[in-house]
Length: 345
Image (tube, rainbow, N blue to C red; front, side, top):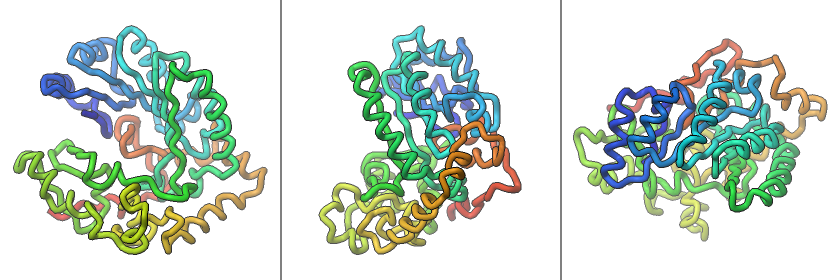
């Protein structure tokens, strides 16, 4: 069981939830910004039965981390790393990657090596919400991407058996899409703080869906028969080219939310797929990103550049610290309020 957010540590009953999960025989994972947390609370989490601690980072340097999160959180994260060394606890570091910090990969990896982490994930920003609205300043160039891949290919060799390194590339540079959360309604069931059950973290952006609540219906019933979970299961909903594609049981048509944002239809083939009729949209986006002059690329990639600091708020992933590390809106930042419209009751 994953406790994620937002920020799960803001829940006053987090210790009770962890104990209950352990009593039920579940492996318990906490995905957190490390705020709010102190040594006493960490000891209590471990005592309650926590198995795995995932700590999110916005960079290896304090300047860019502050720019991204809108608060001075980086020193606290470094303190948490030191506290974690006292416990026999699985630790993963999650770094959110984008154009403004991608050149810090060597420093990020060095930070992981100095910690008790046995796994580090470098995950490029997924372009929904704030990131979608500010994609043009966040999406790495192809040159940056290839440089990062070359570095990690070499750097992870001496770490085999010590730290598992995972790298999630931007969807836009892929030939085929990733399966939506392992396939819509196939692996993931997300419970929101009010008890709504969702097939994926961003499912609320899809119009016409309503979500049942665990306070009024059992998890088993919701998983097996609720309209929201059935909506994109199987293959009957698929359009061409997905319906007749040999890959339909591998990627399940890709991401439904990405299809909605880019194609205007949640049932469409994910436009990042090279077989999608909407793929030219992605190619045009990449062409624009990669047509920037070399001098401009350097300026845009500078992690410590003082300009456009508010744009860094866009890099937060829905599963990390949107709420815990501040939400400093700025008039220069596009705010996609339409992406967060409430679903019908």
